[in-house]
Image (cartoon, rainbow, N blue to C red; front, side, top):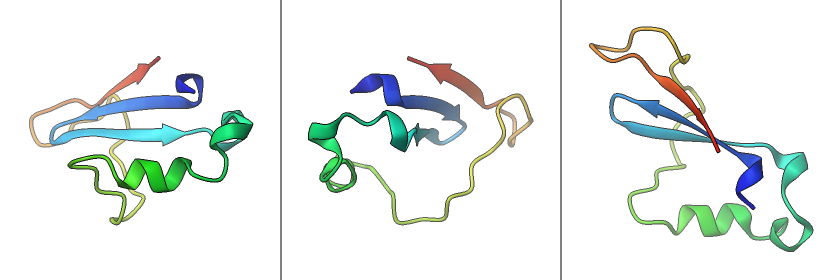
Length: 66
């Protein structure tokens, strides 16, 4: 359910913020595993992300809401 997602566009791609309390019941048990299976999705790194509106090496990160 996409209403639990917020995207932050960054210089190297994007970060996906997931509001856990908004995840629908049918996805509760497998949302994380399904996310890690997406091609080019790196969820193994740290949880740091650039703050939208700040400067990131020549790029300004943008908050994109569904």
